[in-house]
Image 1 (cartoon, rainbow, N blue to C red):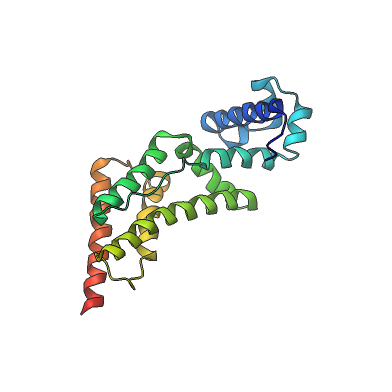
Image 2: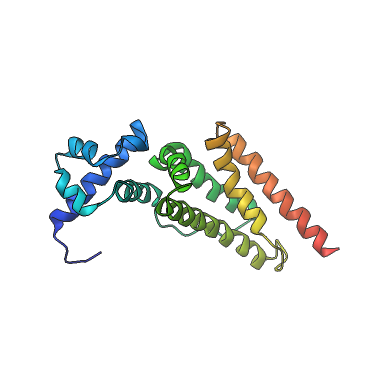
Length: 198
């Protein structure tokens, strides 16, 4: 973004995207149109079209905003179970208590036919995988896991299962389930490590 951009333009875009996010959460993706955002904000449709020439541009900008998570460094002090419980707890909070949990199913559905939406969800998941990878790598450095253990399947399971449980199965994500999930991931990691060391 141009650092010298007119603050009024930035404010206009921010107001429009906040309105689009509200519509996404309350009524779903089909409710997000230039006309509906204009009605909510008072911003003219011509102005909205200048910023987002197509409907998908507008919707995907709202998707990206919902998918933007705060910057943080993964906790890697160990042990593995403690670090995984923390990072996956952050994920569960996002799915349960933030706009992302409401918007994510719509992004996933849009990604089936729209490359921008696919990019949003792929980028988001890549970031989550990397957060968890840092924790596994730290466990390797501490000697909890073999340095040559392939942790990619464990990373995918750690992150993807909460999404399936919440968004596909419609089941709750709570503290008891999180503890069980983390225990399973750690047991699988330990089992794979034992097999490699034989």
